[in-house]
Image (cartoon, rainbow, N blue to C red; front, side):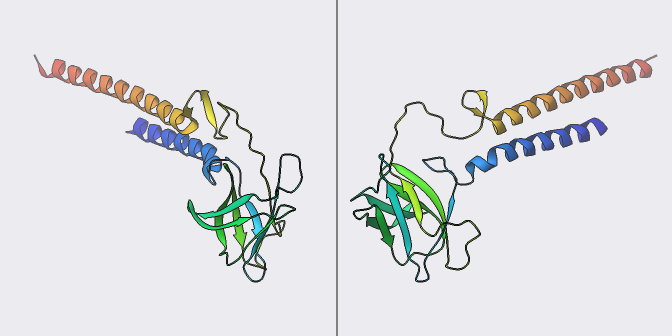
Amino acid sequence: MRTHTLVTRAASIAVCFGMMLSAPAATFGNESGGTARDVELSADGTLQGHIYGADGRGAESTQVELRFRNAAVARANTGENGQFTVTGVRPGVHDIAVGSMVTPVRLWKHGTAPEGALSQAQLSAKDFVVRGQDNGLPTSGLGLLDVVTVTSLAAGGVAAGFAIDNSNKIDDLQDEIKDLASP
């Protein structure tokens, strides 16, 4: 019984450790694999932003889409210098899509944003396509197996080893009982 408790605790710790390693990457998972940026809305709930092109200048006439839970809630086009404005925006976690580039943002009501939040969204419209590029999720180095999967498999293997050993011990004890019971 004591071995079973030890194995259970060890397996639980291993699985929790694996989840801690993989959780930050999935927190704001999206197509770009980036981390969410904090942006403060204006007093009237307007999101302002600036889109930069590949040359570092404002991207003119570029469509910007604001998404909430993968559904488009607003669209805007950039002006001459890459500026865009979206009115009537509610605070919360959103995605800003420019072409195929998607950037997660946390929009804050005016006056409630954390220190370091931007007053306007600043995004790049650079669209690099690299086949086979890393998606930013932590892996174990074993191909498509992530850290949680490898940890779970290892914990399962250790538990199976203890189970087999305990089963063998039980069989040996039953054999000894039979030998003692027979004259």
